[in-house]
Length: 67
Image (cartoon, rainbow, N blue to C red; front, side, top):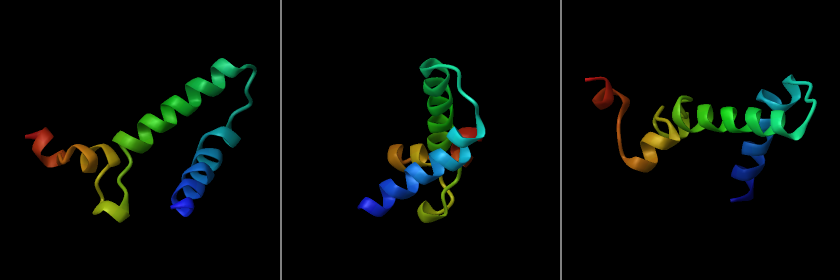
């Protein structure tokens, strides 16, 4: 289980945190919140058949939503 958490933290740091120069904690919170929203609701994951975590958790499919 630890490998999944380590991978998540690595992705967050590499794809969001290290790309910004923060002035305060509010900016950090906003960037992490935005990245987390993207990661869970927009980014397809190959481990779950190219579905988003939200789709997999709520048992929905993007093709159903678009119709």
